[in-house]
Amino acid sequence: SISFQPAMAAGQYYAGTLQEETFPPYGLFNAGEKMGKNGQVAGWYHYYKIPFQRSIVVQVRTIDVCQVVYVAVRGHEVRKGAPDAEAGLEISPGFVVPPNARLQLHRIDSASYEPLSFVPILSVPTGYAGILYLTSVAISTSPARNSYVEGCWHFYSEAAQEFPGLVLGTGLEDFFDSAYWFCSATTKQQQPCPFAHPGAGLLHFDRSNSTAPGTSSSLPAAYERLSAYRFHDEELIGFQDGARLEWRVGDVEGKCDAVRGQSIGEVSAVNISSYMWVYTWPLNASWPPAPSSPPIS
Image 1 (tube, helix red, strand yellow):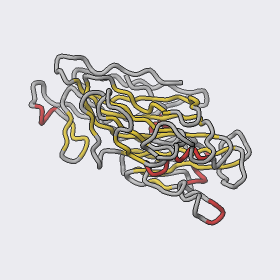
Image 2 (image 1 turned 180 degrees about the horizontal axis):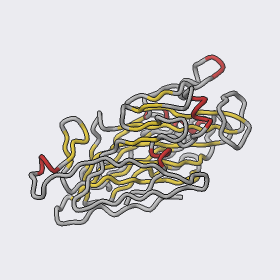
Image 3 (image 1 turned 90 degrees about the vertical axis):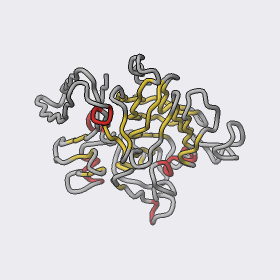
Image 4 (image 1 turned 90 degrees about the horizontal axis):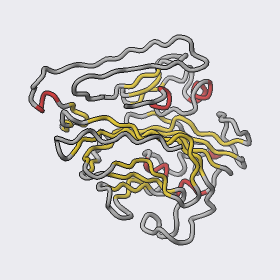
C-alpha cells in the first residue's frame, strides 16, 4: 500500500501561507504537469502512474482542520490477457514497465541524523529491479549555513554494491539541479532562489531565529529549513538487483570518494523528511511485489 500526505507528495513540506509568499499570489506551482497546486485552499494534484493488476482501492482520511474532502481519481483499464506492450505503463519516454510493476513510496518521517552519517533515502532488497521516479526532501538544521549541504548523493544499482556507487550529486543542491546553496551563497543579501521546474524545484527555504518555519532568509540565524524535489523520468536511473540511495550529512576531504577523513567545514545534525517514489518488479515473475518498507521515524 501507499500512504502519503498530498502536500508532501507534491514536494511541499512547508505549505499554507508560507507557500503563498514564496509563489505569489496563492502558492500555485506546476512541476512539469506531474504535480503541483492549483487552488488557494488545497488544490494539490499528482499525475503519478500507479500500475495495478487485479484491483485497486483509494482511501482518503481527513485531518483535524479539514471536514470535507474532494478527490478525483483518474485511470484506465486494459483487457485481460493483453500483451505486455499494451498492459504495461510508459513511465519514461520509450520505457514501459512490465505489467507486474508496482509504484512504491519509501518515506522518512522527521528523523534526525548526525553529522557525516548516511541517510537511507531508498532501500530495495535483492531480487527486484526497477527505476527511480521522484525524490523530495525537507531538511532543517541548526545553526543556519553549517556545512551539511556538502554531502554527496550515492546511488547503488545493486543492493550489495559497495561505496561509493554512482554519485548523483556532489552536494545537496546539485542533486536538485541548483548550485551554490540554492543561490544563497552568491546572491545579494544571501537570498535563495525558489523555483518549480518540470525536472526539479526548490519550494521552500528560510533562515531565522524561530523554531517555526517562516519566509525570511537572513544571517546569522539559528535555524535553516528547505524543501526540494527532483523527477527522474527524463533521465532514466534503473537498478537490477535491489538498490540504495543515500545522501550524506556533510562530507569529508576527498569528497564523494572517502568515508573517513576531516570534515569539510563545520557540520551539524539535520532533521529530515523524505518521499522516494520508485517503480519495482520481481526478477522472477512468480514472486510477489517487493515488500512495502515501513516509514523511518
